[in-house]
Image (cartoon, rainbow, N blue to C red; front, side, top):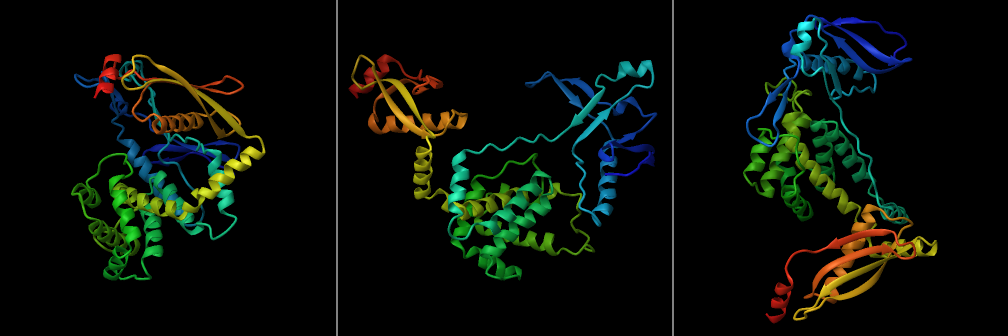
Length: 386
């Protein structure tokens, strides 16, 4: 919110606040008399999937972003204020008729897309029931949420700090000197198991870097080497002196992206372990029983066709699957399909499934329709002879 504002000079251009009433929604900077070479170009690609490529050569943009980030750092010393520096819209306005013909792309922008989280209702009911007794994973949730949010905002250094603080607090045994902390972490088998898992299922990064963490991960490191590396980076990012010649800088977040992704994966595994009581079998039964008591149960009728080995004809059968719910959702459809396939494997492990279709019993609403086209009748007969 700004009570009042007017244009000011910046970097050879003019900056003004774009607002609705007193609420500022954006900042606009106008640079006049600029060469058309700053506008995006459309280039033809000789090989590859795409035939055309858009190339941007806007050399002013990095300086504008850096200047605004520096400016907001002054304000952030006093207030909790944020600028979405990654959400940018640029208009390339021709000043002459000749320039109009030289600017094929008149505007270019980038914006982060926020996708609403969709949860199945059983997650919520399990969480409510699990909170009835015992200690909730509030400590783990606080730090992993902060680490996750920081990563989404591309504050990779802060994200690593939150993730490592969670590891150190739970498994560091109160040690703070590097050598002792490394030993303490390595002695915790539950942590080393999580590190090993994280190395196998690393979070994807926006782009490949050449940081020391990237180099380490490319060498197929041991769990011990990864722990050593994270403790050393903890010293650098937690206690690094700003007077060091290689001190970290807040605008150099990319160098910590791989470190952030790795440590966050470990932190999420820690939080999943802390939330394990939510998936206790007793809670699953309570969730189903409560849904049944209030009439929130749907019966799915699955009709399927299969062929037994050695037979020359198909057999049609059906089965009912009851699931908690009041309406069909995509996740429910997948769950029912998975349940059906598992039950079919259990009762007819060597039969060949040809097709399966599912509807809601009573309403006939279609849930899924699956056909299997692998193999032939002759192959099925041959299987029966083997």
